[in-house]
Image 1 (cartoon, rainbow over the protein chains, first blue to last red):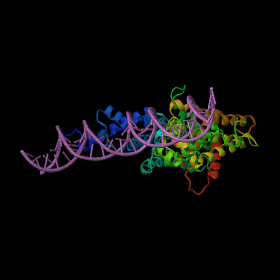
Image 2: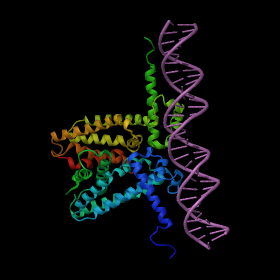
Image 3: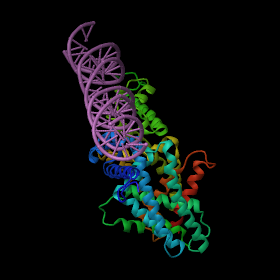
Image 4: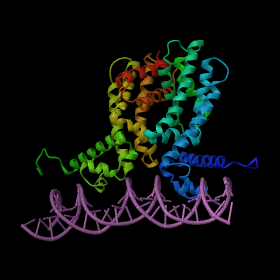
Length: 201
Length: 201
DNA sequence: GCATTTTGCTAACCGAGGGTCACTGAACTT
DNA sequence: AAGTTCAGTGACCCTCGGTTAGCAAAATGC
């Protein structure tokens, strides 16, 4: 035994701090907007100086990317769980899309669709794109399954259909703002049903 | 006669210059990204100094808004023309959506969807929103007409349907990049057909 | 035709904020 | 105890959006 158990190691501590920074940045970016948040403000909220942040990210944009990745992981996990449920492919697809939408409508996730995409520089694109592709593939596979089990139209093109459906659903993130009478869950249910309408068997 | 005709008046000249600035900025924002374009660069391309630009816009963000307005006008006009054609409401809706998509896929229009929305500050929102609302209304009216003339399903909800369809179509602007085998017109036709699928009578 | 104002622009500057660097003090290593 | 690693600091630089004083030329007034 080189150390007491129960205390985080140096590496773990470092990662915990990194996560805390990302969490803090996510909230601030999401509520105040990327442009309007200074690194100084983030640092101040964490009780350190700006320069300290550069131990955990290489630039402001990189910090945003880390926020994006965290959000994407959350999204992938929510959808994965929902898609793994019971029922026909159509039913599971519906659940997956609803999970996707509801997660996306969380206040601190809004920036994902509002701020992040344009900021993605060619260098960062790779890691972001893999999460996106993964989600895309999950939905596409479910569309395939729907053709096989007969719950979706046999003549649909999974690639095109997933673009259409995800487009419709992503758009919600743009136009939906809290305050209208309906809850995110209700909105998600309506939009998902509507987006899938043309594809049900 | 206070002046020779055929020469632009002071006011006209000023407006021409303004347009030229906006056109130049549009191209640069579209191809290089808002963040990466300095006012100095725009000014240099126009052969003036940065400060001169401030005679025609109040801030960099305002310049972006002027680009946005120009693009929106273009979009509204293209859609208006297409919607005014002959045929059933479904046919005209199809034409309108294709016009919308093709216009949106122009290289110098990409920034509209990639860069502008998040930059819109609450003050500017008004003017931008009116163009958006106008487009939305045009499509919604056409959906209404489709219910009336029987070319679209009688049970569709125009408000929800327009959000779904426009969402699907707007998404193209995000994922489409030149170079794939198909032309913008082909893409537009495919996506439009697919997005309308669930709503045809 | 001369004085006055208005206009379009420039040169020089300011300040915010992203990013860097030399250094420090504490903790781990040997 | 001496050396090494490392998180964090404070002072600094530089880019870039935005401002201001002033100038020359065109428009306007008398």
